[in-house]
Structures are given as structure tokens and as C-alpha cells.
Amino acid sequence: MASTTSQGSEPRVAPASDGTAGVYGITTAAELAGMSVQALRLYERKGLLEPTRTAGGTRRYSDTDIARLRRIAILIDDGINLTGIARVLGLEADNADLHADNLGLRTRNTDLKNTNAALRASNTELEAHNTALRASGRTPGG
Image (cartoon, rainbow, N blue to C red; front, side, top):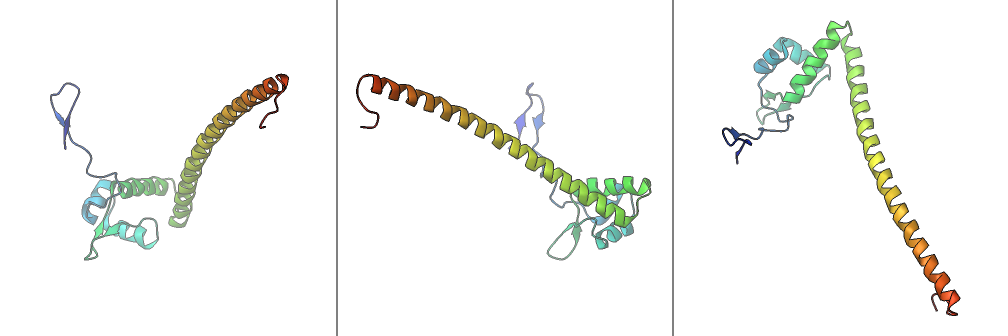
């Protein structure tokens, strides 16, 4: 379902995927990445990327794969060999995972601090109520 822009002039089309769906054939992917078809096959053999495959076995590359291929090209231009590139890409993925985990932990920590503050406030109210009950001669909970 297409929506319109704020001016209402042109329809806005939702993206076809989140960038991870394999939509490009190997020739198109090679052109988009600026490298040869043989290079894509080599990088796959070396485990640097894993394109999806159709039921018939045809490789399909996603926008994420194209970005990864461009990153590989930059690392090659920097003089890093394929083994080093595999290590760099692995460390970059680990770093991204740790960053996401850290963000989640920070959010959880904030939630726990807020819950703790609410519990402390509730405890203060209960203590005040208990003190009032004792002062009136009644016992709390009794």
C-alpha cells in the first residue's frame, strides 16, 4: 500500500525488503560492487560472504551482500589479504553485536533504576504508614 508525501504530490513506495533479501544475480551484483564475477565466487569459497540461493541453486545477492563486497574491496585496496579480511569482517561483526548488547543493557539498567526508585518511594510510604499506625496504638499488619 503506497502512501503519499507530506505535500500529497508523489506516492511513497515502501522498500522491497530490509536489504537482506537476495534479489541480484551474480553478474548484477558484481557490477554493483565494481568487481568481477570470479571475485564474488572466490570470496564465497573463502567464506567472506554467503549469498542466498534459489531452489535451483542460483546465487542471489542482497543489498547487505553488496555493501559487504564494497567493504572487502576497500580492505583489499588497503593491502589486507583475504585471511586478514575474514578476520577484520568477523571482528567488525562482533563489535556491532557487542554494541547492540551494550545498548540493550543500558536500557535495561535505566529500567531497573526507575523500578528501584519506584520501590523505594513505595517503601517510604509504607514506613510512614507503619509509623502512623504505631503512633495511634495499632500494630502494622495486625
